[in-house]
Picture: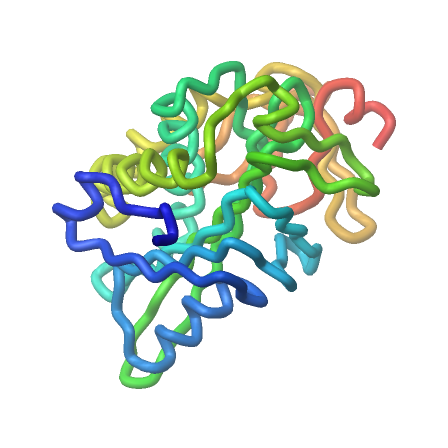
Length: 259
């Protein structure tokens, strides 16, 4: 027995689960299944991930006892412009999972991290692909440091065990599957993103504080004001002007002034 199981809401919504002892990447496995005709919603979980990836080409190290899971999600009936907002559904669903497991004091860092006292606890990766026959699929990837935090990173990282929580990856996963179902209902194929946006902002890290975003050679600095109706970061400059940022390397608080 793998120990992993779906929550009651996920089972009722027709989610399925495949568990592997080891995979290179759960996101890759989910995308390969989509190319082979799988529609989803299908969860792919690996006890060990050997070549996971994060945003912007970064690697995601998965230590034994951590949670590595990906959800293949059908989006044929979703406006392509709304598909990227599924990343915020993933964030809101993961925060609900932490709450369900009794983990408190966390915050969402735009666009795809969960922080605990400024240290990275979890990362999210949204990948979309157009498939033959006009099909489209999205994979939401989740990596949570449950039992161990990777070392040698250019930023601080932590894990639930270091935070004195005894939650297991298998238990957190049950809450995650139900949290995603509940968040997806709010999202309503993109039509309810306003509700997801409100929930995301309620848990946002660094609101009202300095932020710097680097994209290539471009640097945008100011105050993190909000996210807009498309999920873009809204930054207010010293002169009161506002700029929206779609992607980039984000530095919050005191790190923003040094970036």
